[in-house]
Image (tube, rainbow, N blue to C red; front, side):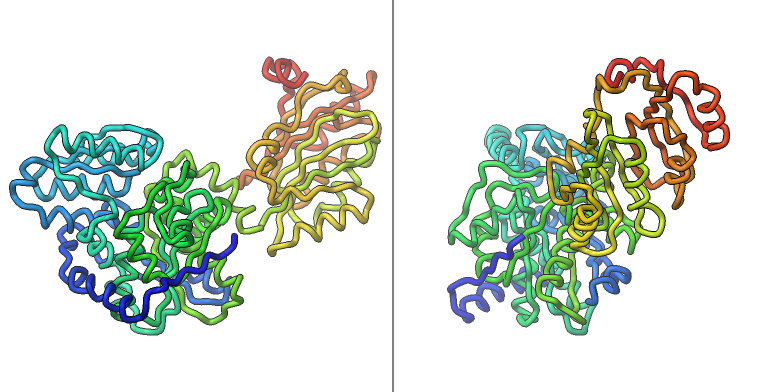
Length: 522
């Protein structure tokens, strides 16, 4: 994604004064009644791979698995006894909600939390576990925020803003205080996820007051980039809609104060896409065995993108891993897209002749000695040509174009689908269906050891006169692979088929009479 350069037209003196105005607030912030000083850890494998030192500020290790309790508690600790007695209210996509609920529990007050209906159940349950009253309203933070303001007036509560409040910003700024205390050596840049802007405002204010040579780089997703657009426009921009994959940063309008601070103090921005975020979640897992939520991985995704664009080497970057409230059901999607996001998997649509032997010839081209097959989908649909959807492992970015060219050279028309959203999200799951050409088809489900050569052993053992009319395989990361195969075996060769199945020695189940098959594929 294109970089967005940000630098205020204000002079250095004004920027310094703005940063210094928050320094004392951050130094005196009341956060450690609820927050820990989270560790600053090296991401060893990632650092080695990109040729730069990557440090992770592990805010995902807070009690609520997010930095948000810092700002929430600091704000609430400065409320009067009368305000605390009446209770507090906030709007949140989830992490601020937990911070407010936990802070309310520690301070002995009641918290009402308005959350979008799209909030993961994990976060809703966490808020309730701290004693917070949950009200679900709207599809985004902005919708929940408007409803929270109504309830604030109706019930006489005190509003605790998730980002646009000096006390909240100062509380979040203690993250930067800890980073500079924990790492005395040089830091080239700190990468910070942006939703409404509270975290980056506090971090930028402290760093620019104490170590102004360190770059502060904000990170947003391509479909929730309100801060980037606002800085470009020189005024706050409201997005018509926001993407919800990174629900922790899904904010339509950034704060007035956070916009003022970000515009003046943040050096640059990186905008990342969903696949890059999924790859970053995997990167952090490989180094830490911890699973971040999408918002928590934005900084890591941006470091990789920034280092590649600028050809950086030997620099030190810090990513604030700001949250780990991951909805477990979302892991399926993350695992599916991580390989593509890191360009460790390439997807293709390949056309081969619909004739006996061509299927095997194509498989030999991509088989052992070349690369791993990650996905293989095919359904007979034409008498002359066959369309195959295939996924292959890759070792470096940009390799998919080379593979496509190789297929083309061997006479197989190929379309590179690696960056095609329709293919990645839908078509890969939809290859198949009924076919008039699949008469006398017999359907088998096989289990085979997930090792090189297993697929070719299957194809090589098959009689050359038998036709494959359906084939479906997807590498799921397990020890054993599963394939679904449709075979058209000439009448009178039942004995040969039985011998083939016995000699193959892969566990199998015949599914020809399965009602699901007959409803959707027969």
